[in-house]
Length: 112
Image 1 (cartoon, helix red, strand yellow):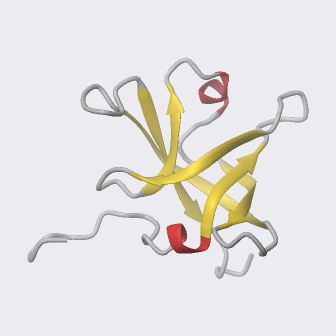
Image 2 (image 1 turned 90 degrees about the vertical axis):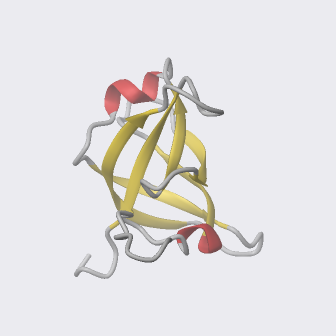
Image 3 (image 1 turned 180 degrees about the vertical axis):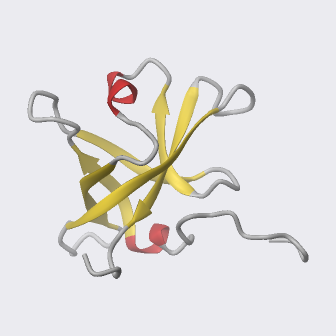
């Protein structure tokens, strides 16, 4: 971050040190989805979802889901964490064109 800039991320970068992927289901009728956790923009950590993916129809900003985070270290156990969808941002240009970044905020530590 450059001097004078304000951090706009909802979740610090250290999530990438702890977890490599996240798994969740949006309903009992839908399959579970597995995504690598990414840090691709100033908007923060999240998952990249193709614009034609069925899961996008079920995700909305403000939704809170139970997600299973898979540890970066191979010997660790997955951890279930309540997670809020903070933003869904479409990439129109660059290497992620045709994808949406779904920003994630882990809700642990606030009485959960």
